Length: 143
Image 1 (cartoon, rainbow, N blue to C red):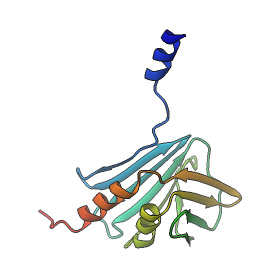
Image 2 (image 1 turned 180 degrees about the vertical axis):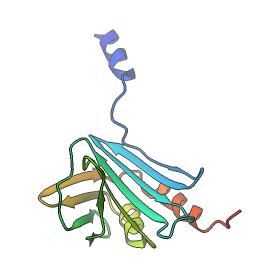
Image 3 (image 1 turned 180 degrees about the horizontal axis):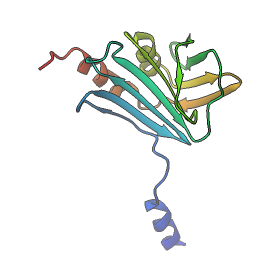
Image 4 (image 1 turned 60 degrees about the vertical axis):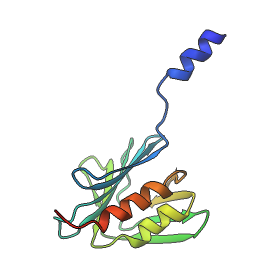
């Protein structure tokens, strides 16, 4: 029994942590239960902010994409400017500012991506500190 526990302890499991990196661009990443979330800031783009949600199964085609943040400072945002990748597994939105998205990620505990009749919920546990690092990265002078 003890050997089985040790084996299970070291098996790879779902990655629940939010991570921040700034090389080569500011980036937040999170993965859980068949969903990968990436938030990118690249000042070289006309619309420097991008959020991309990649799922194991295709997203439905729809005119509206929404994010609902719950558990602190409840917030709902939506757009019709989302893009689906070929195969529809990645849904992305680019814009000139993401203040509401960053606030939603930092100050809440759960987010739900709403695409047509599909609602996919993901945890924001541990997101606040990486979001703060992401915000700090945005104000660093360009080299």
